[in-house]
Image (cartoon, rainbow, N blue to C red; front, side):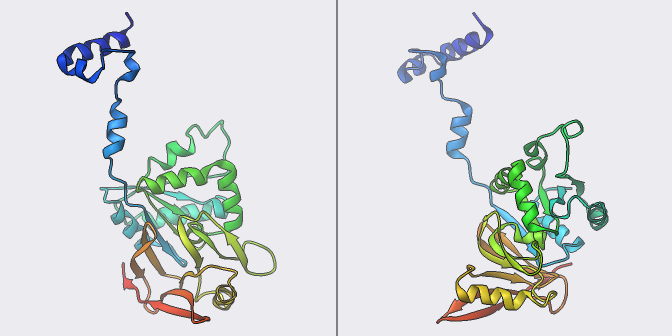
Length: 274
């Protein structure tokens, strides 16, 4: 008798009459209900969390992300795909984390298998928070899809790992938004769609952002959504806005939509964080 068969037989035998009533003694060991099946039926879904900013995802935003994890010295990973894994951005991330009680790390996307021994799931699903860099959103999305990173990030979100970032790192979580990822002019980019609707980062910092965003929503080319000034952001649970925050006086967040055929820009006043 193999060890597995012995263990199953012993377990059934210890159940006695109860096992007979359940019919567990009739048929192969595979009829036993697994602990995983029992756990899944009673599991409580994790709260899905995303913390974005229009620009400048600095120490204050990373501190807030760390708090949202609910962990002591959380593991925070920087994902600089949109910046082509630029070393300067990686260094700035570690500098921003230096005053905080966090375990910072980063994961390049431009890798090869000789040195990259962990899969994307091994890396990202072991984290408590993931900060996505700014940069070229269109290229970021193409690389994530080619590598399967988009699928792993969705699982991370579903597991309650806090996601976030600014610029490309905020735009990537929405269905669509305005981007400077193509030559000549701002345009529309489609993204992951974790958060429904659209997004415009850098709302106060780049002159073309506000008029284009309102024009696209007004024409129906883009869904209503959220615009964030640099230094201001939103904390979402699932698709609900739970808190609007800022690290600079005067930096704001807006919900842009259509009412009675006209574009309406509603100010969402932020709370200061530090």
